[in-house]
Image 1 (tube, rainbow, N blue to C red):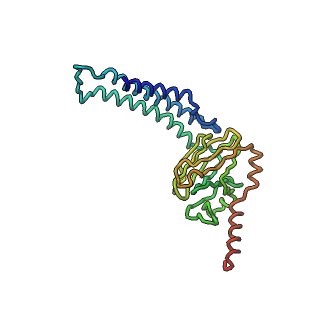
Image 2: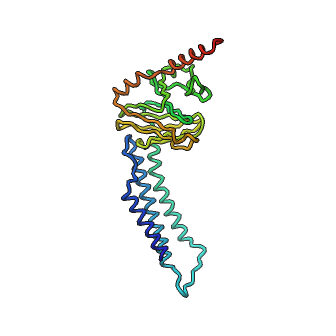
Image 3: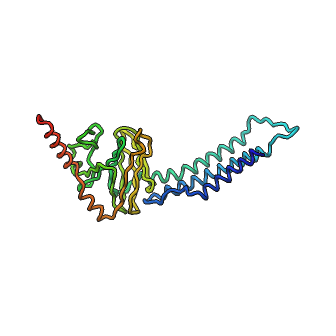
Amino acid sequence: MVVVVALVVVVVGSILFHLLSPWWWTPIASNWGYIDATLVITFWITGFVFTAVILFMAYCVWRFRHEPGRVAAFEPENRRLEIWLTVVTGLGVAAMLAPGLVVWKQFVTVPDDATEVEVFAQQWSWSFRLPGEDGRLGTSDAALVGPDNPLGISPFDRFGQDDIIIESDDLYLPIGKPVKMVLRSVDVLHNFYVPEFRAKMDMVPGMVTYFWFTPTRIGEFEVLCAELCGVGHGHMRGYVQIQEETDYQAWLQEQRTFAELWEERRVRTASSDPEQ
């Protein structure tokens, strides 16, 4: 009976913890309320299964407890029970996967009017690139990454000359406008994660991943790396600043383009090496 009581206490305690503890995440600041809805559906399904299984175990322990003269029945196969369990399990897994697949399709189906923003990760910092007046990002290549070109942007692509380079951990975006986050890593696995946006995605070296969102709240939101990436992983943080359009445009005018930074570094390199 001690085991039965312990199992029931586990179920009741888990339900009370779920309902009464302040475990819920921070208020959402993007259009991805779908993520919260999907998690809630998943919690309900897994919570029901957890409760049913544990209470069934408690019932079995009590119902088939040892009694003098009771002999255990040996039944190595039960085709009807196996089919029933397979069907119910399959339906449960499908019920958990279906909402996630629907939301995932929305998560990677980028609107036509979304602005591309590149996120560049390396141990252990963030950098960003925004399109210039032409509205598009130039090409880049990890082979071009170096002291004078930390983001590996092609100096021969005319579309990259006016790209805005943000060599800091802070990114500014306007409120109410969709953005496509293009994610690149130059060294190891990273993960771009802003909890309030309910948006995160792995950044795999040699690949370009992406997702999109629309900011819905003005404010400062912390960027975290959600993939263990080395000894400095815990310090790989930054901020996304969401502003009104006028404030964002004022900030944007203060930033420097790739062409300006490239020329400045080329001149600096030439001045430090008289033979060039």
